[in-house]
Length: 169
Image 1 (cartoon, one colour):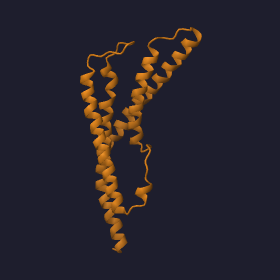
Image 2 (cartoon, rainbow, N blue to C red; image 1 turned 180 degrees about the horizontal axis):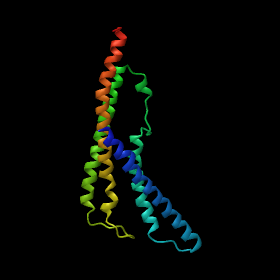
Image 3 (cartoon, rainbow, N blue to C red; image 1 turned 90 degrees about the vertical axis):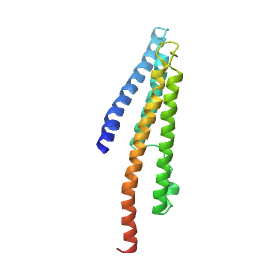
Image 4 (tube, rainbow, N blue to C red; image 1 turned 90 degrees about the horizontal axis):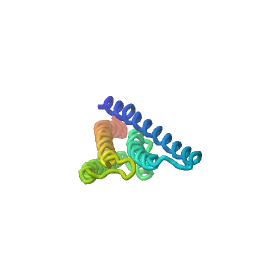
């Protein structure tokens, strides 16, 4: 499972995020260049930049969570006993799984709702834009389930070792 996670997030998602980031930068630079030098910017660049920014943010946040670079408040957890830290971490992973499932579920529902809508300028189906919601929800779900499973498997053995060491065994 770890190899699958590694390939999925460190290669595939990261590659997609990099491509989207480059597209976003190139599009914004094209917008600036045409506005300054030709006084008439391309009409589609603003909309395209907005859509790529949405994808960049959602997939970038998945990548950030995978690398454990997201904002976390561990002040209270660091003050807890090891057993309570273990339970708290399970609670946190459960909440991540819950909200990832909500994002995936309602993201799929939204795709059905916006089925016939098209963007005003580029005339792209809005399903392609909103598709990032269920995709990122599923990616969060896979990541959170994997992290929780690792925590349960390794956390119990870690707690048993710490408990035995405290009792002098």
